[in-house]
Length: 398
View 1 (tube, rainbow, N blue to C red):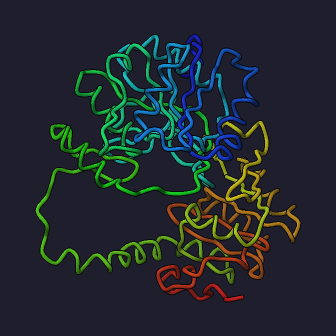
View 2: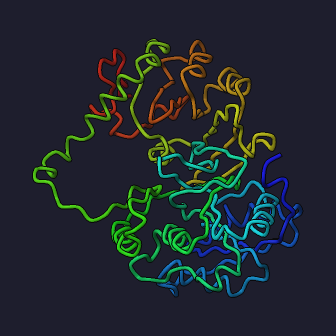
């Protein structure tokens, strides 16, 4: 029994600032509506910022917190799809039992780079699933929880330098500086993010670093905030060539996988960032995450339908048996993406793969693209950095 299931439940208020009503309705609102029977006291407070009434996330979320009926406040992005409201109420109960925790998030990162909190990020499962709240360096803004008693004393930062970035990072450092804990635990969700907004992220990180120099360096999910450093002569000249180190390392690491698949084309690419370019040309698609021994929250519930750039996708997590069945039983005219694979999983389905409609890729973990989608790949997959060193069967142009 883990810390969440041992805790008594407390009702929560979910607060979200949105600028796209369709995304809100298709993700966060739809998941709350589907799950409300398990936690009928849960409320969703959606703060409309389509007209840019609020200049920062902190200002909008503080406004929403002022409207909340409950003592435990969950702040979530509009593109979050929840898989359990009970887990949120159990996390609130955990906070009631542990007043030393000032902020509890769904996704955090430790000082040594471990991602804490199991989630589906776009099309892949990420993060460690731990049964106890784990202290972290910083929390991601995707979803986090603060007791009202703490927020009343310390509202979210509304500083213009932070705007829409790093407000959870700043809050975690603030409560840590006051002797409270910033921690992460599993709050099951899918982050159906369509973009990576890095605009003025560097400004936000510098603002956080200048405010908490005694806590630096701080690792975040978007990089490390370090003390200001003197520029090294020649660093700019080397920057365009840094990809070569990663390319060589990944080329060596993937040699056993490339040997296992024979003539099937292989690329080095981050499918999380490239999936929408594929979907723009070929859809619908079934996305299957191999959940391994840790599992994932939606494994028993079955497939979930989501939209990405108005393209229909079905996402599902499976065990080893389900993975093999998905490859063996798929119709040839159906596009399928398999993710979160290691060498053993690739070897278990290798005999079922055809070079004619299969691409295998790697970015941290292995993935497999099957069916018509293999004819609609991004142009940069043909570039040198996407072709492993020594690859005998490069991606063929269609």
